[in-house]
Image 1 (cartoon, rainbow, N blue to C red):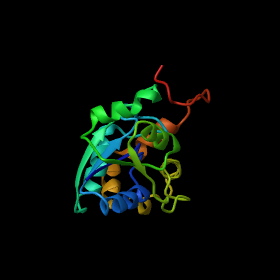
Image 2 (cartoon, rainbow, N blue to C red):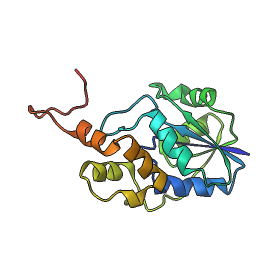
Image 3 (cartoon, rainbow, N blue to C red):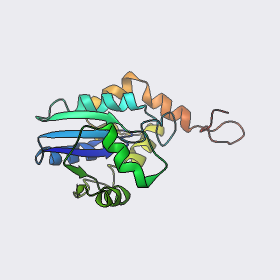
Image 4 (cartoon, rainbow, N blue to C red):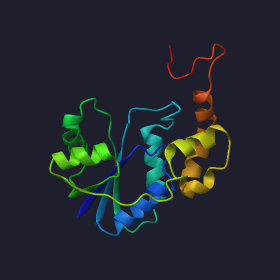
Length: 177
C-alpha cells in the first residue's frame, strides 16, 4: 500500500519526522508532497522546493521504506486541488494529514484520509522554527541532523534573516518591486 503525506516542510522538522515514522509502519511506500512548491525566499516560505527535496531525501535515508518526494505547486481552486495532486504524484491508496482543509478536500474526492496526533506541536511548528532561525535562537535540536546540514549548505539562516528584515522605510521585504 502506498501513502501520501503533504506539507510545506518550511523546514522539515522532528514533528514531520515523527509523523513519517508512524506512517511508515502502516504503508509499504510513501509519497511526500512538498506543498507550495513555487514559493520561496519569504519569511513564511524561505526554502525552495529543491532545498526541501534535499531536506526530506537526506532525512529519510535511514527509514526502511521506499519514498518519493514530489513538489506540488499551489492552485487557487480548492475544488480541483486533489486531482492536481493526483496528477503530480505516483498513485496512492491513502492520504495522511491533520490539516482540516486537506482532510475535507481528500474526503470529498473519495480518498481515504488518516490523521494522527500532533507530536510536540507547542515547539515543533514551522512558524516557531522560522522565528528561532530569524532570531538566531536554538533551533537545530528541533530538526533531523540532515536538515541542519542542508540549511548550513545553502546559508539558510542568512537568507531567512535577510528576507525577514525591513527596509529603512519600515516596509517588509516580501515584494521585489
